[in-house]
Structure formats: C-alpha cells, structure tokens
Length: 235
Ligand code: ATP
Image 1: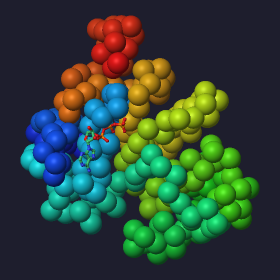
Image 2: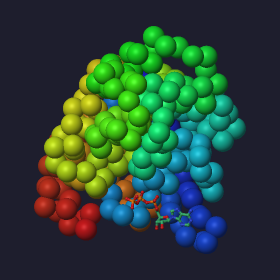
Image 3: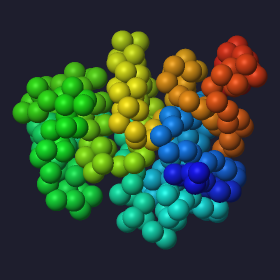
C-alpha cells in the first residue's frame, strides 16, 4: 500500500550552519499512530514542520499522498492538520469562532455542521460560546486540535501535545488521541515520554541528533531495547 507520507533522504541545515536533520527516511501508513520520540533538540519539530510545508528542506523530499510538499503545497496542506506546541490563539475569541475561522484560513466555505461534529467529538460543544481564556488548560489544547481538524485533514500532527502538563491532563490527551483514531485519521505525535509512545502509538521512531535511529512497532522496540536503555538513550 502506498504510504500516506513518504520522507526521503530529508536534510535540514539552518542558516546558522546547524544540521538539524541528517538524512531521514520514513514512510507513514494511512490510519496508524506514529510517535516520534526524542530529547530536546533532536529534530522532531523540524521534521514535522517540513512535512507540514512550513519549513523548507535543504535536501531530500516529502510526499503527502504522492504529492511533493514543496512543489504542490496547496494540495498537501489541505491533507494535513498541525497542532502546534504553543497555545497560539486569541484568548478573547469564542471557541466556535476560533474553530470556524481556522477552516476559513484553509480557503474552505463555512460548514457549521462539520464544526459542530468536531466540537462534539472533542467534548467542547457545551463551551462553544465561551471565550478561550475561560477554558481550562486541557480544553485549550482540545481547541487547538479542533482547529487542526476544521478542514477534515487525513493526517494530524501533534507537536508535543502533553509537554508541561500534569499526569491527569496527559491521560486526558491520550484518550482524545484514542478517540480520534476511531475516526480514521492518521496521527503523528512527537514526545519526550517513553510511556506516552508506549501507551498510544502503533509504531515508534526514535530520533536524536537529526537522525532517525530506530523505527519499530512499539512491542519490538521495547523488546529490543527495554525501557531502561531507551531512557538512557534519550537522556
Ligand atoms: P524540542 O523537544 O526541544 O522541541 P526538537 O526535537 O523538536 O526539540 P527542533 O526544534 O527540531 O528539535 O530543533 C533541532 C535543532 O535545530 C535544535 O538544536 C535547535 O536549536 C535547532 N533549530 C531549530 N530551529 C532553528 C532555527 N530556526 N535556526 C537555527 N537552529 C534551529
């Protein structure tokens, strides 16, 4: 089966000469949940930013459903939703407007029925008229996901969805991801946490120093390395 995303020999050298990616190859299957596990500065955000078409690669290429992200950005961006690390959203806007506006940014016509479905799926429906600033941390993160789903992407990227949150909120996010899986969307998330990768992913890629060191289904990975060693590798 043709992968929904194919990353081929991807390199990135930033303007200051720093090599953030040193030749990454990665195929992602439609419908899977892939966790990219790695420490600070490993290159995770750079990798997903290039796949999402917001950072230019230095070499290699990325195909999304067979289309090149650099040459055919308009087509590929319609297929992708990105949930960024930071909560960048207008605090004084309502949940409904925030999510509807996001759909407009992608150039799609308003679709209230779709927005309603997305908000219900993320248990945000009762908060649709609330301002973002009135929401809890967990709800704010769910609004970011709703924004990313507002144009019905086939692939969803979550950049460290549980960074800096407490255990309860982390578990809540895991449940959200599990629910999204049922809708058939392909999910790629970055994380520092072994437990998180083990809990929700089908496959795990270990990335460090700009290289994809391992890519396995999670059971094989844990068997190969064991948690203790994996922890050491990530330290
Ligand atoms: P974290 O878990 O801390 O978010 P990461 O694995 O997502 O880390 P990246 O954000 O991709 O890592 O960064 C990889 C390396 O590239 C880091 O050393 C970072 O300092 C460097 N880097 C990232 N963006 C730039 C930039 N715009 N210019 C120069 N160097 C950069």
